[in-house]
Length: 346
Image 1 (cartoon, rainbow, N blue to C red):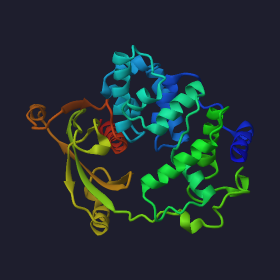
Image 2: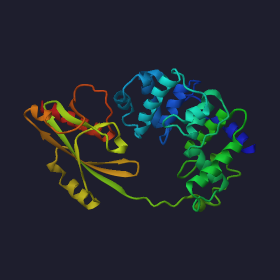
Image 3: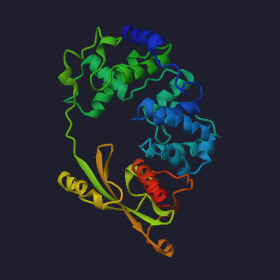
Image 4: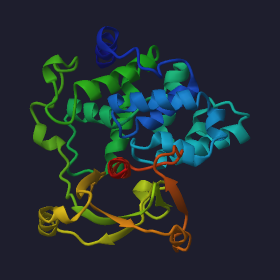
């Protein structure tokens, strides 16, 4: 219990207590937990505030179409989360009369919600005693106990960590404990150069003495993709296509593209000859992927050509009119540059 008390004492003095979703509102807590999956608090906050202005409750999400949801989500990444959010909202509307369930087993069945997220929803909504085991909390426990993770499989490590966090979770103030653990993990026990001197657990933590055992050796496969975007232009109109094939941009709109093989040497040659291109090529990173993007503008003089393009899920997009569709981050960059170029020619 000394571990738990140190965590709670730290929370009362230093814990985050004014985050926009820290209210006894299950919808807000569920939304924040989905947005916070693999994403930092400081990045989530502006997206969260914008999202709840347009979608103030679960029924508003259920009654919306996915394009509008993806439009608000654009730039936050991990777009499968937005799809799962929409699916879950529809289930809550149809199966639970629009009221978010308060049963762990039922919540865990919903799309995009696992054991840790289900526990977080119930802990922060009702102060129920459910542990949370996100990446931040895992890191604290592994370092504190000096767990050698090099020779263990992920499911073996998770089994050990779930047992530990369940032992540490106090009967009272469990939601404060959970929040404190996440705060310490994201503010103090950070992945690189942790701030051990100000950590409430420093006295008994084994991290400094056996650092080398706590690092899992990973073989990072270099995943590179080359995309040649075709910006087809007729006056203010361009062609967008809905993505149903690329997992990391699922359901979003983009310029029609061609995949090509790329190497660092080839990329340097392209960059060297970029004067031939109207828009400079650039690199976009997503997950473990490095995407080399080359845009080309194709001007056409007759609009009927757009109507005979054999492209599935085509959208004739007026760049000066607002469209509520999901667009990936590199597409926003290209659209802004393209729009500026058209203005300059007028």
